[in-house]
Image (spheres, rainbow, N blue to C red):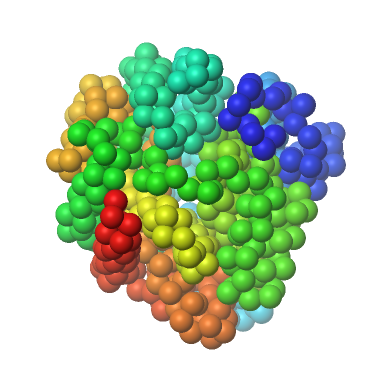
Length: 607
């Protein structure tokens, strides 16, 4: 399994058990899942009895919230089990059905409880605050109730909320259709390498293959990959346009000024945070152009193409890293986070939290998931690259964030917002990079690592901001009534790509189709948080490395905070104020300083 870029992908049943996650820790069998599913349906229906009675007394309100939370924990486990089994092989119809059943029962839950918000918001102005003050058992729900009141201008009548709940399954359709197309149906033509060997292309192999030192192979892979998307571009554009229109419907139905505001307001994030990110990154684009010029020079090419942006500037010793070694590298790099964190990290990496390698039909990419009642889970498609090692550190950051939050708070307060979700993961990456650079004595290896660090900035801060700007444009155009077909989407994306990479990058026509391969666009206004989270993580990791134990204590408290307060406030307590440009601007200054260091090493090596 360590040399998985060669040969064919294994069937799921042929993957050794030691490389698989232990989803049976959630439910020991499919039969156990189905049994709990049946019980959960009955428990959901019982919640309907509370309708019209939430204002009767603090006791009844407490009983409702407590019972609802218990049901949500069950739903969490049901969806996690079904989704993860489905992700193991997205073409498996049995687990597709289980996942559909989990989605349906979740939708049923929201239909049954649709009375809650309108009923709570119809109570006398001070009723909820007085109920919390008088009833100690309501204390864990205080922030949740406060947040509910905050959403009053965007909450509809009881009948309207019930109707909105009925649209949820329909509203998920564009994303579901796209995920099935992207994970199970699309196929890529194989190419041949310089030795005449057949090279299979998949989502998981695409970027690793673009890291190859064989430029002709990179070009072939690049063209083959996007040729497949070009064949379906009109269909994918129709899926994406449907998702944009769905978002506009919910935006207007809930009386928001824009789809951006609708999504950011869910976590109480002002839209100025989003717009300031775009402004700060645009201000730093000359540094990005400097990096592109340096990359062209180092690769020794007259023209730099988009298939040249992933390949390392120098050959590195980390081109193929066995997974056992990857775990050791991550473990060593994260020792500054303290003994307890270090123990949990190693427990997770060795005790069935991770599904490691790619197999036929497996969901692409990587994620950390799981449910409240059990340990986290990590899906990888490990290819043995240094980038994959950083992905391991990244996803384990998510997992331990969840572990700390889940073990500190009740379910309602444990779930942290998307806005802070990328901070723990990216902080791990920054600490790992610091450790690797600190141990490096070979200038060629240092050059390799510095290039990787710059590529992280490029991929996380610049690239995700470009994605964010693309989202802003297409949602605004949809709101203005403009038609967004494949041609229009490609034009918008191509123009942005030219702006972000600058005059020294050839704006290959194929890259105009990149929007079609980004699943995150079906989760609107999500990707900007990679960039803001990266900026916050740079600040937090710097404090951990310079201040030691006091900073580690504050950081662990940040992890434990979960969703017990608004994310902007949680970050302020950790010393990062994202309502200002300062964290993003500071991170971009680090990019410039790393670029300076790279140029210095290049000069020393006379390259």
